[in-house]
Image (cartoon, rainbow, N blue to C red; front, side, top):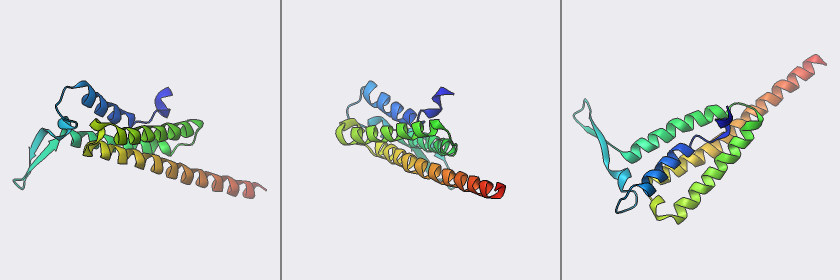
Length: 143
């Protein structure tokens, strides 16, 4: 379980960069705006899904897994938070400085990474506070 400390949101970040920088396209973000599939709804409407939509859906699912990881208390939790913060900073720098990252899909990945950082720290702090209060209650009860 050495990969437990690696932020899961590195997956959509890596997928975005691989598609943007390894596939030839005329303009940045062109792949993420193209229709991947369409679904005919019962209301006769047509739901159009783009590559960016699928990438954002993947990142939201991975964000849920990151929140589950944040509830455990161990020495790896701190490393996980540090790596998530570094990932967010790297994504922010890329968003501000790289032309291919100036897309709505990448911006939403950046927002997801920010929620991961802030939410992860918040969940860990709340979990640690609860653990401390339980230990205090047990200490007072045993005395």
